[in-house]
Image 1 (cartoon, one colour):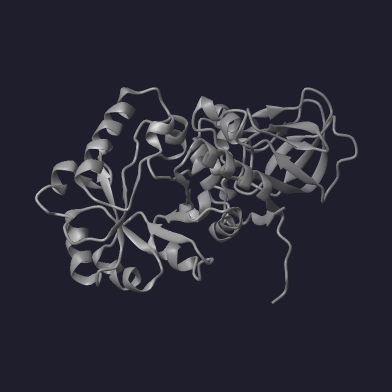
Image 2 (cartoon, rainbow, N blue to C red; image 1 turned 60 degrees about the vertical axis):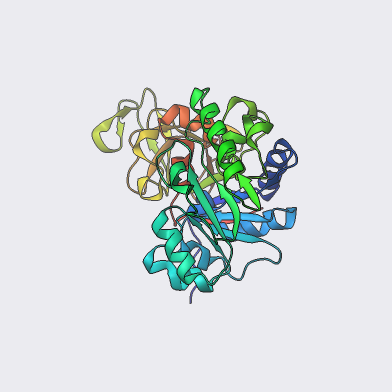
Length: 348
């Protein structure tokens, strides 16, 4: 097979990833600090993220589906893997054969695992107020979970990124559940939950977005480092005369004679049209404003003040998750998970 270089790359900092995990682990106090690596580690590449974090000491990983779990085997020595979406009727072959635990989230899943799980350990999700996945608290009564070997009992915070009274309510409910349901470990806090303080840590925390450079709450600002740096190669540098327009809809008119770089990237790669008017890039430290609309796989930048930029050069997008989210209206999660497969992932 002929090796064809990609015109897009996602430069990924292993140092920043590990530093973020270590800061989150320190905030978790005596609790173990795991890692949510669902959605291909929020678009960065789950296998490589697992490898880097396992080498740093992380032992607990979480994915969404059994297909994601299968893609990570064989697992690094000494790590555990849990599957948030539990054990559906069509998942049981995978759930019984892969080296991962289901996070059981309904009475139906509990019954199915009790019948076919052969006594293997499982995790259980309890709904403490989010009304998404998990058994209702009252469903745990009356011996519903008897006979299960529960490794980790989990719940999930709905509003941890806000100063919401719901956080304290969920914490109180989870404390009650902890007293009633025996498990080896208990886990409540996601990235934002870790920032809420030690009361939310219990035995295991499960950060996600903060690992990858997202700022879940103000307490993390200044501590979490950017991990992902999207870069695009320039296809062409062209001269645009004063008064001429660029792109679909002629939304940008040159106020002077300008030089414009056309980058090999667009909304098919997850760089969406909402970046028009606020997006930008840099080349050798020089700021390059995005001009016109974002097309399917072409985007224009004004390089009039960038010196000798030319075809084949690489532009680094302005893509710090918190500031880009504020400009674009997209969430930090969407920004990372939306980056497409045409980006070659390159760890440095």
